[in-house]
Picture 1 (cartoon, rainbow, N blue to C red):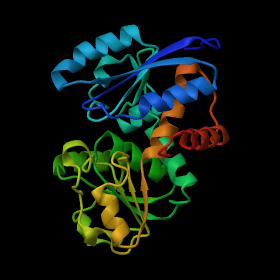
Picture 2 (cartoon, rainbow, N blue to C red):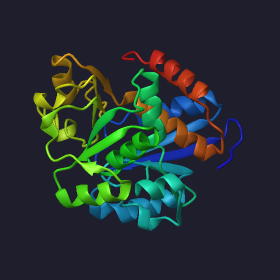
Picture 3 (cartoon, rainbow, N blue to C red):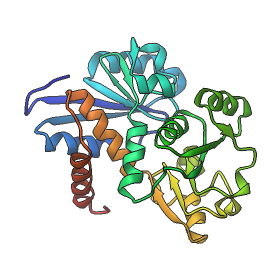
Length: 272
């Protein structure tokens, strides 16, 4: 959509439980900086409610975001996919019945802004769902050596074949430069749990969790206790939202603008 300054942009977020999402605040901030009025609705839906929710969102919004666990579920409802969404088999942004994926872009911007280099690094990605797949693909593109782990072996092998990487048989073995949690374990009803134990962090320099609520997951707490650099997914959420908003409004984004807006947003938040 290409709107005019001051025009209202109606957006939404679809997920399993998005009641505590920071997305409305982030999108409102970005669009306000560009001179738009943002109306943003969070929709928590059960699997049975997804068809009705998709019908409503496709008809009554200018675009919407998708999060766990529906990044793949929404694909049959769409007419087309971007190159990234097709490669990741995962959609986090919908505009005009076309699915996009800005997770990889947001993920790499987050790591770069935090000073965590990935080229040539051995990285373990925990989780082979939409977020894990997009993160792994982005890391591969950036020159990292990626291994993946998922408890569901069938899914793990399917995703590893598609991405051309090897599965990790034992995530507790250590020996990785960076660990990335893309499982969702550690938020909502699993707060206080980690997908791996402390031995998994042996030899690594940094641990990254896509979870941002709570700010320090059990995964990150364990990593910090082992003396590792830790990073949660809050700035990734901002950067993927920025990329999504560029799609909605037909704008060309830039690293400089994204980083400046992110700094301004975090500075505007009492808890930032």
